[in-house]
Image (cartoon, rainbow, N blue to C red):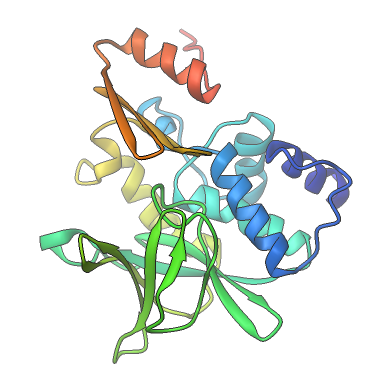
Length: 261
């Protein structure tokens, strides 16, 4: 597939028309991240459907753009990073360590995020963390950044790493910390395998599919379908695999793959 065809297919997936006029500007970056979050779900379904996740750009493009599935961080930010570069953005993947409450921060390569340079400014772009900022966060430290998903702040630690926090009930709660060093997607392969195969990984413990909506978010798990709309939350119990599959198709347009004997 030629570059132009690949870009047009990706933008069609994001419901952006061919006459888009996008370039490496902050306005384009904001639009692309928001549309990505509204149209491509965060999900770990292949792990539970026993379909190995391989961090190879062509395979990720086919899964997420052509087959119209979602993915988790390495997949979503991996393929989004390729689109940004195709559109002329200067980017680099960075390794992040996710905050796990009392467990502290996870290991290196726990999460993949993107740093985008626009003019003289840098931005943290992330379409693979689930419930996170809807728009890029400027890589300024110790400044409150207001987003439709909350108030965020980026801080710099003494060791040089950056830490992203969100205001929750009057306190700053870390989301993850990341080193600004650029990484290749292949460097995340070992942790990707841990996340999809290890019994210690939270991704292997249950299915999840979640997407941003104009009024909030909708999330499907093995046991619940949760919809937040304009601050109001509703929950439906998911009592069977068949009911899970019904909601998955109706709300996310994803079908369980046919199992061949």
